[in-house]
Image: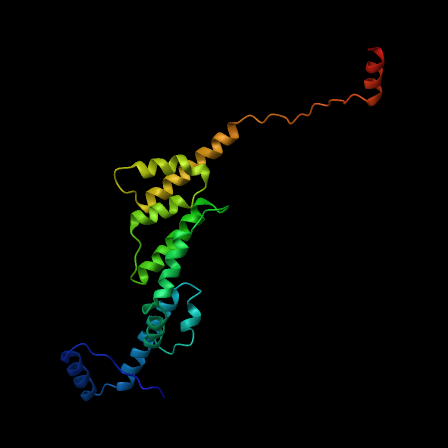
Length: 199
């Protein structure tokens, strides 16, 4: 049987438990209640983390074990891991993904750095996001860079979405000319000979 430590914050709770036990209360009732509360906390932890992290705490018997596993895995980041994430953020590019996916990717890395106590400066994050955009966004990129005040992540996301929508609209208005080819015939060698004979 696992030892169960019932946490108490102050003397009053200990005294109230003592009085209840003296008046016929059962310690087993308190243990059962504590176990139920612990399982609720453990379930809350499991429900609040991303699926990729669940394997690290899947075999935790109680909330404390889950917290310890998470702390050992994520609370003591290595310098190498932080440098790797900073490199990912520096080299992030939009490529063929949507603006929303691109922004989510950048935000995810920035959030992970913040959790590792190495937060990215919001203006630096904006610059890195703008640097990763293609040439089609150079106009909006110039406008954002020329601002006197910093732009929030949410506002940048909105402006990029609006810019992409305008680009699609302009592309739809551009008339599509049919592809044509002109056929030209090269004179045959017999024609050249006839010209020579006429001279």
